[in-house]
Figure 1: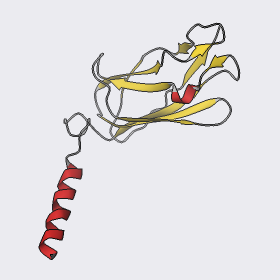
Figure 2: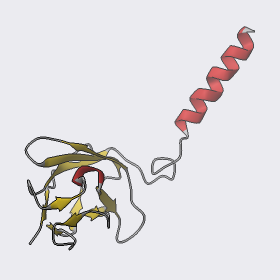
Figure 3: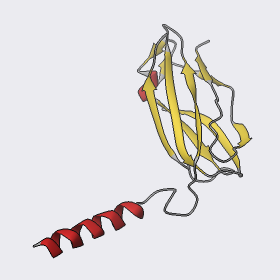
Figure 4: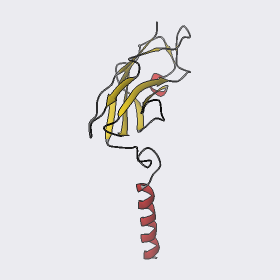
Length: 134
């Protein structure tokens, strides 16, 4: 019985060490991008914090890292994208779901657009975005 428990523990530990995602493909790392998304107090139809995501990628390739967006205070969402490769040119941009609309039916504008950066090992640069309805 003890041998089975030990074998199960070894299999579980091995499975966790080779999880899927950016780290398993050799493209993960220890860099992080963090920041906030400011949005207007009124004029948006939908929940901004569940309707946006921050995409970090090399060129226009597949998104890297593990991202999370949370509701914050004062009409802001905070985000973190971790597990990013260091020493590579990365594009950081805010993607808005098509369901998030301004009161007039138009899509909100995002500033700044795509931001290019090269992140150092263990660093966490801050990039903040703003949604606006015009």
